[in-house]
Amino acid sequence: MGAVRPASRMRPVELVDDDEDAGPASPSSRAHHHGDDGTGGPGPDGTDREPADTGDGRRWWPWLVGVLVVAVVAGAIATSVAERAARERADLLGALPGVVRPLEAVPTTLWRVRADGPTPVLAAGGAIVTVSGAGGRWVVRSSAAATGEVRWEVPVVEPAGAGFESVAVACSAGADPDAVLLCAWTEPNVVYGSAGESTPYVPPMRFLALDPADGAPRGSWEHDGTVLGVVRHADDVVVATGLEDRRVRVERRDGIDGTVQWSWTSTAALVDNGGVRAAPSLVGDGDVVALVAISTAVLDARTGAVLIDGPPGRVILVSGLPDGGFATWASALGGHLRDADGTERAPVHALPVDVVGDGSLDEILLDWGNKVLATQPADGATVWSTSTSMSPVAVVDRTVVMAGEASVGAVDGADGRILWEQELTVELRSHPLTDGVHVLVPEPLGSLGQVLVARGLRDGVEAWRIALPPDLVEVRAVAGRVVALTPTDVVVLG
Image (cartoon, rainbow, N blue to C red):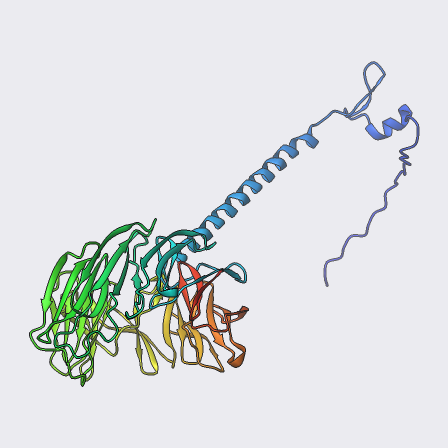
């Protein structure tokens, strides 16, 4: 049996009608309220005395006010810290090449400007730089990323006039926002002026260095000969030139005044004047450049030292590594990770993929057929492998943004798990971007044009979509902004 609750005991209760409208209470009624326990009742002189004020009603409210003040101040500090951290993160992401500042709202068109040519838009000096050759007059313009306000504008080439070939100006910016802006173009030749000549005239290539802050010219120079390729390295340029004896000379020249830093000339004839073989090309990544011809020579871009002198008939591809080394890949020989001096570290299945992002993934990513591998750069050990037809394009917060011909998704950089994948009905015309919160996908809609769709970075859930220009060519991330390129214009979103 359970315990029995004791029965309730009834006590006599005296009901007192405490009417607020009643008149002054009699001494006997005040006795009922105050009693004679020292807290009220008649005093020694026979007059009524008030209850002693214990102060309980006044002691707690200062403490309550203090607690509220502390809570408000703490909340304000926490909010300020969170806002500052968010701004710092936004500034960090916006400063990364190929990454967009976090979009807190659905973006709209901020501004639009005329731009075309080989390099219509790039980032330099914390602004968006556009290059336009409308009407034959080539102009380089720097504009504030958020407003489009023109900071400076420099005409670099005037119209050549009738009877001359057209000109195309290409500019490049350095990794440092304060690095000089280098622009280059080949002087126009007379139309049909070289036909039938035994020693046809080869117009020089001109270089112009501009200060990214105000557009002031920092220097200019010209390079004679048949230019086969130009690669920027720091504030200098590496130029490959075809010689009359069909050999190729590779030089590193100061970007501001053209001073030769080092020079290397091939021992064999690499230029095929008959047009049977493709012309030699110059490619570079990191601290290496490669002259790719019937044989491949890999050079140290800093010193001109020959790191690899490949055999005839072998094309060698190169890719820089974050630690200063580089990787190579050649048919039948496979891939290798190498130190900066060319020494082999380890074999790898494929050439590392060039991805943009925050560098939060220590491993390098390889696209090997229908697999993506995360590999240790020190020894080539595979950390994880994922079967997918998509390829890596960006890394943020150890999340890998992936893209295929008609698909987009994300992979966890810690273990290679596919977080999400979205199949599209039409092939992508431009790689997706990321703002650290979303994956921004320019999706074609057939005859309806294209839209920019934002999906969650880790879950792929659609957040919003906006229409893109109907004549869109490509979508890029420039100076932390989404930039849509058309054949004639640059459209900045934000």
